Length: 234
Image (cartoon, rainbow, N blue to C red; front, side):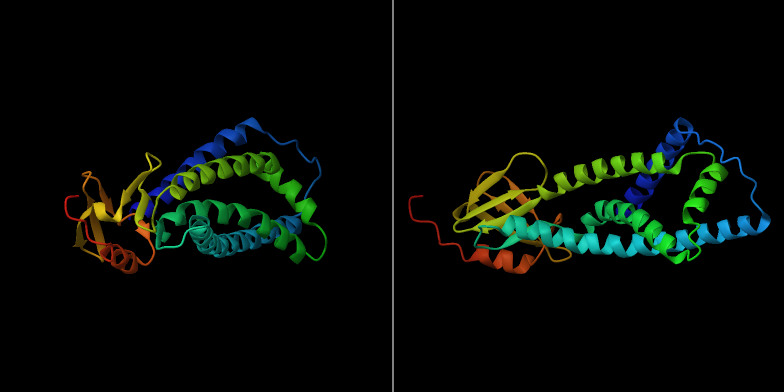
């Protein structure tokens, strides 16, 4: 539910931003009359674009989600011999949606042009600008810039959420804040929680919660339980 609200909020922000940009980039009139048949062809051209836009947007969003998760995992796993947990896959849906629909905009425009066999795509694009009352090319440029900035900021934050076990040490971070490192011998309690989640308590009083993390949590926990026992007097 939280993810749905985040995506809905993001689209609302884009709509408000789009309206502001629209007023800043008025289009110059083409100045040529257009027949009723041409108007019908233009509407068909735009309807086909919308179908392609939503199709490409959804498919590319899913591909970005899969690709980003694998990329995060490989980056964190580089040079590490041990168990790794990274940001949960569902958390990547928001930036993946932004990037997916951004890429979908250009993919749909390219495919729509290829499907317009009479070569009038450029003509329809210019008339669509006049019909809507703003320069879609300039608006698209600002949307690209804002999308990349938003997605990059979200991904930068999400990349810093992880936990890994390397040797006798656990390195973890649940937010872009301070990186924490603990020895396996500092684990004082591992508590199973609802939904196959765990809470790992350390001597320092810190607690590693796995709710924000994705991966093989059972294997990760089992690897911690194999920690060597504390030596007497320590």
